[in-house]
Picture 1 (cartoon, rainbow, N blue to C red):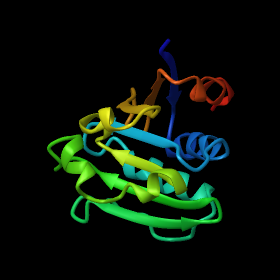
Picture 2 (picture 1 turned 90 degrees about the horizontal axis):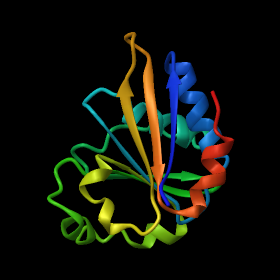
Picture 3 (picture 1 turned 30 degrees about the horizontal axis):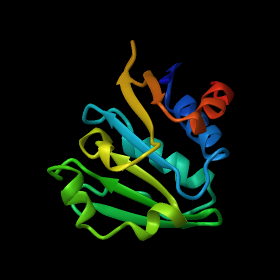
Picture 4 (picture 1 turned 30 degrees about the vertical axis):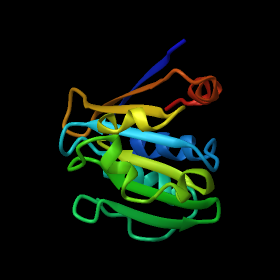
Length: 154
C-alpha cells in the first residue's frame, strides 16, 4: 500500500522545519529520494536535514562531484545528485553501497535511480503560490515511513 502525504509550506523557514522534523525520525539505512524542478529546493532541504542531524559542514549541491558525504553524530549522510546518471546500474558502479547500511542517503533527482532501493521515501518538491512557497509530496510503499509521515507537520 502506498502512503502519501502533502504538506504546503509558505517559506524557507517552513521547509527547514519539515526537514528538521524528518531528521528526528531517520536512522542508518534510510534512503530519501528528492525530486523537483531546478531551483525547487532539493539542496536547501538537504542542507536543513544535515544541519538537524548535527553537522556544521557546508552542504553544497553534488551536481559535479556526483556525491558528497557529511559526517554527523547520527552517522554519515551520503548526498548524491543523480541528474547525470543514466540509471541504477551506473549508480551501482559508483561504489557507494557501504554508506547505504551505515548512513542516511539523500538522492537528488532520485526518480532516475529509485528502482535501486527497496524502501525509500520519495519527496517531490513543487512550487507553491508565491516565490518561496513549496508543496512537498511524500510517498512510499514501505510501512517504515507510515508513522514518520503521520508525525510530520508544519
